[in-house]
Structure formats: C-alpha cells, structure tokens
Length: 423
Image: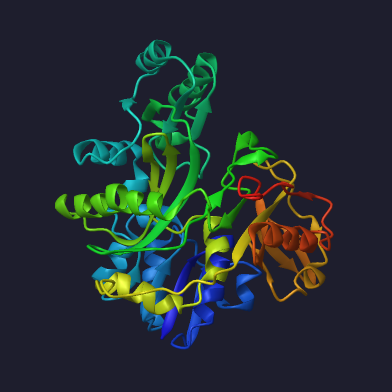
C-alpha cells in the first residue's frame, strides 16, 4: 500500500514509525513531516491546512490510504474531501469531528444522551459569563469552545483568575474565533486519565490506557501546555473503572453520534476524571493524543495499519490488538520559553548516544536540519520514550537517555510518571 500521513509533530513521528514497520506499507509519505519523520517516510512540502493540495497529491501519487494526525484538518473536512474523491482516509468527518472542534457541541451531546460530565453553561458575552462565575465561585473551569492548540483551557482557582480568562477570550480575542464562545463548567475533583479507542462508526476497540502531564512544571504546577509527558498503562484506571468508562462514556458517545447522523470513525480520545461518583468526561478529542500516542505505540505489538483500515471500513467488531506487558514513559523536551514563545534554532547533539539503549525511542516533535546540524524548531521539540518492566524502570531509562542529550536551550520535567511510581 501507498500511505500518506498528515502532520509534523511527535505524534506523527510515532505514527510514521509504526506505519513504516507494517509489512503491507510499501511506500510512506508524510506531509509535511519533520527531520525525524524523514527517517521513516518521504516528506512532502504540504501544510495540513492545504486540503486541496493534499487531495491533489494523493490522486497524483495513487495513494491507497491517508492517515490524518492533527485535529485541525479533521475539523475542516479533509477526510470528507478525500473520501469524495475515492481516496480512503482514516479519521472522522467534519460533522463527527465537532466532538473536538466545539466543546459546546460535545457538552450538549453529553447532556442529551446522559453521558457523565461536569455541569456547564455556554457564553458568548463576557458580562454574563463573569456573573455566572461569581455565582458559582472557584475553582471553576473556563474553556474556549474551538481549537486553541491545547491552550484554551483555564482551571481557575479564584474568581479573579476565571474572569481574567473570560476577558482574554471574549474581549481580547486571544484565541480568535476559537474563543468567541466559552464553555464554563464545574471543577471536578479526581485523577485525570486518557482512554483512547479505535471506532468504526458502531464498534469500539479500546487502546491501552495512558496518563499525561499537562502542566509545565514539576508536581503539575505552572501553565497548561499541550503535554509535557505521558506514561502507559495508567494504574489508576483499574479494569473495573475502564469497563465503566467504556460502557457509560465511549459506547454511548459513538451511538449518539450515529443517532445524530454523524457516525464517528477514527480515534476517539476520552479525557476522563475519576471522581468519587465514577469516571466522568472532561473532553473528547478526535485523534491520537499527543504525547499519549508516543507512549502507546511502542507498547503496541500488533500491526497498526490493518487496525486503522478496519476502523475506516467498519470492520472492527472482531478485531483484537496485542499489547506489550511492559510499561512506557514518554518525557517531552521543550524549548525554553514554552508554553510561551520558545527559543528556536538551538543545536541539539547527543541523540545517537541517547538512543543507544534498544528500549529507548526518540520521536521528533519540532526539529529541522541545517546541513549536518539538528536544530530546535518548535515549543515541544523531542519525545524520549522508554520501555521497562515497571513504570519506575521505564522512567529511569528515559531520564538516563535524556542525560546524554546536549541541548542548552531545552528543558523537561523531572517527574513524568510520578503519580504511578510506587503504586
């Protein structure tokens, strides 16, 4: 098969690595890719937002299957365009991608179909939103309705902080059109965990569990980011809690989307919080999580490509996946300044030494080549993933590898996996 992967981050490098290893993948392209992905695929200078360019390339190169990594082209209808041209694609339609593209849509769906989530209201005007916050008090959660690159959520510990987030979105337009409407919801107490599943429109095939770290600083402190690391499996999601989440959240959501005339195909990511009343939904994503994907795929022993093909064709009912019993830990190395303005252009050395351990894999998230030099070219730049018999062992292996990397402009959290270590 000739396969085209869309995207350029660490998630896409992990996907490229997995797809390139499939015996049924004869040729892998990636648009636009990055310097790490270039070791697995032929990179093509096409932006994920260039929907027509991607369709034209797929037709010209006789692509058999397109795998869409990021959420933005899914929300804007790339899969719809490809399928209309007879090009099979993995990922939801634009109508189904509203589960991530509009937090208000997702919350309304939960309310309509009795999917457990936090109480909420939607607002387009700052005065009304601030009044609601003052009535409810803090802590409280303020979310931009649309896509905001993982930075549109404020978990406000004070009323003043919540009002500032409201003003930033609705008055200052910090998130543009994505923040023109807000979802304000009750803050729930509990441990957060990620549960992803392949979905074929009707059937749900859960993947292994994972837990990510959104805050930039050790001990889950500081600003929210796109994710500073992840590990799999997540011990907090016991088999009983996982079964409850599948039956009360994932399956009802898939059935609801079919009922609404927007059957979901692709990866459905449920961000969960484990409350005293059981698992509740924080948010849906409609693609592999980043960095959860990087933690998950090294544990996947099955061939990924047939699973993605089965999701697209509606054949997941009797499909099974095999997982490595070992744990994985993914540590994100970011450029100084992230999640604000990152320092770009710093040279990165030592990756060969860092990856000498066969149980360590390095995925590139934001790098570029300048001759023989590897340079940082983003906020989150590298993902160092290690396997181990336990999370603690995988954690130690990942940080030992990081010790071999020479990148003065980079930093990482020193405690990825801390919630699970010692369990």
